[in-house]
Length: 327
Image (cartoon, rainbow, N blue to C red; front, side, top):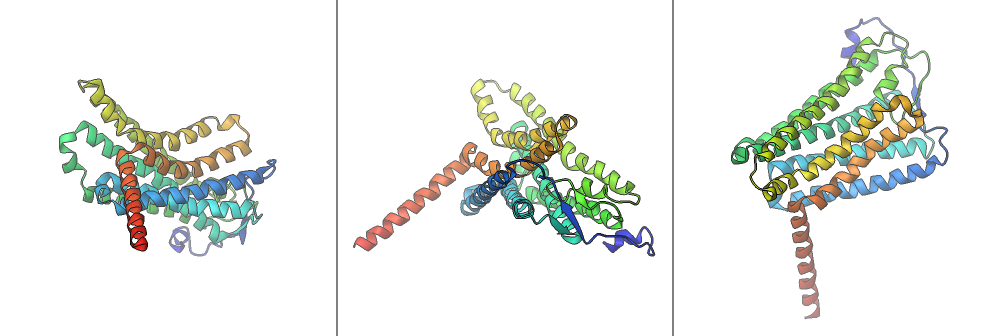
C-alpha cells in the first residue's frame, strides 16, 4: 500500500481512523429477524455449493470445460458467502459495528473480489454455451479444458489487480470528518466519500469498477444470447431448438438472479428509501450463492444423473455392509 502513497509525496501525513462504524441497518424495526434469515441463507449456500463441488470432483464425467467454470462459480459463491455473511451477522446481530481500518479494507477487498468473480464466471459460462450452440462441430476444439482453466485464471488475476488498485487508493485518503459507513459492509463508495482530501482518483476508479465488473459482462452475455437466438432460429425443428435451448436454462437463470436485482435497485435507487436500498443490495449479495447450486442441481441433466449415481452407489455400499454383518 505504501506504493500508492509514495506516488503522491513521501512527506504527506495521512489521518487514518482507528476504526469505522458500519450502520447500515439502523432504525429498521424487527431487523434481527432478517439477520436470522441471513444465517439460514448462509447455511444453505455453504451446503449447496459444497455439494456441487464434491459432485464435480467425484464424477469423472463432469471433468469437462463447462464444469471447470461451474466448480469455480461454486467455489466463489462459497468463499463470497463466507467472507460477507458471518461478518455481517457479527456486526449487526451482535452489535459489533466498530471495525478497524485495516480490517475494513480487507473486508472490502474480499467482498468485491467475490462479487466481481461471480459476474465474470457467468461470462465464461456464456462463452461456453455460445460456442456449443453456434459452433457445435468446433466446440471441443475451441473450448478445451486448458482454455477454460486459462480463462478463469485470467479473470482471477484481472479482478485481484483491479480490486487491489481500488482498495490501495483508499490508503492515500485522510479522514477528519465522519467515520460512519451507511452500508451493510465496507462499501468502497461510502468509504472514499468520507475523506476530507482530494478523492478524484477514487471517484474515477469507483465509476470504472461497475463498468468493468458489471456492465461489460452483462453486455457480453446479452450479445451471446442474441447470437444463440439467431443460431437457434436456423434450426429446422422445434424439438431441436428446445433441446439446444434447454442446455442454456441453468445459466440463463443464474444471469437473471444475479443481474436483475442489481439493475432494478440501481434504476429505482432515487425512488426508494435508503434502508430499503441497503436491504435490496444485501439480498443481491447473498441470494445468488444460495440459489446457484440449487438451480444447477435441478436444471442440469448431467448433475442430476451424477447425484443419482452417487446415491445409488452409497445405497449398494450400505446393503453390502449389511449383508456382511448379517452373515
